[in-house]
Length: 551
Image 1 (cartoon, helix red, strand yellow):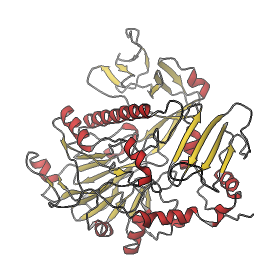
Image 2: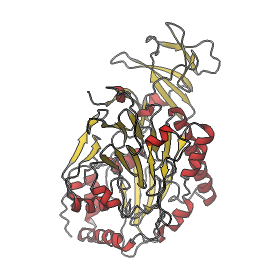
Image 3: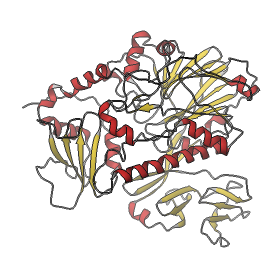
Image 4: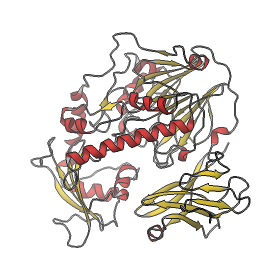
């Protein structure tokens, strides 16, 4: 079975993107002659291969279309609405496969996943299940235990400590035996390198109990465990597997890791199949498998909460008033809830479970962010899904609750969820802040940071340049006041210099007030510099560095 790959099929430079007409655009790759359709309305763009699903005919503009949204096949006059990617003639028939769009500094790449639906390889008929044969036990956040036959699999174990320095803490109290369950699992899946999924405090404790436990990750270009050696965590059985290939665990159990269409370099999702019954875990993927997913799976799980970004809570100045932030956050959460509802409706799983959103900004210094950064509730999303799709069962999990798939499939009107015993602690009320923050403080107090030369060394190592952006970084206390004796410096990324004052030429400018775990920002003009942030998040060199800093 060939692994799934992503391939850029067409690239438009920034000038070509600006030249796109509103409505339908026909484009051709001059190298291979293949044709594509790009639909633009305002700032929204969708794209697909110019090929009819019926018999491969070429689409042309439909002269009967007054709205500028429909194309017509030259062979048998099938019609496609490229605004929705739905075939309108014949109606209620097919959806056109959409291409992934990668936008970098104004240019546009159309990306295709091949094969698009690899789970259809080697299909298996669904067999009857016995009670207790497949169970899902919710642990906390994105951590779920799957029991299938006599095998146990754990997803994304974050059981202790913070994520994102000290920014996120667990909302739910994991079951008291969660660490024992983890160490006794047959295998672990970790979706990506963000620390609410790849939790080094959790893995450090796991490694002391069972360093050889099998852990599976996707073959992302930014390796999930790129920091493992430096972390000191002793895990000896990391398995990097290709995308879109079934991994057989035993006679009945197999799984497949798929890439995210928007962030294939780092994000993944998962399909697990046991005796022909599928469980789909899309985790945090923005567009899992480029939106091409199996329909009618037995269980689907996805994130739901929103609020993972620091935008706009950590921005100030200009339009970023408290009322603007509140309105923006409210609208974004509503859009996310509607999107998740429509996604679940389109995929028609038998059971849906929202998870991977149970975090809180618990540290006292993050009180403002916690109060400002409202999130969707799992119960609200499930209510929305039930209203839209009454036939889909929903599960709002609490730590230790168990879903029995056989019972749900046999008679969904009967009880198929076992709740934890009365008196079980559901929400955390203490987080051992000092235990973890002392380690962060020790890192920030390292010898190298006593000498200003580390600044130039770091940015030269990072290698980001030839970009007309200047940043000012100011080290602050918890209240974003300049830290006495802290660093305050400029970096000009056009030539990677460190000027004392801002250059006189026209340039984009960002001020970053930086404390241990949160950056407060202003920018002029108010533009998101994707290339800059993407580089420092996922494109830093993988080679370990050894600092020799001299006064």
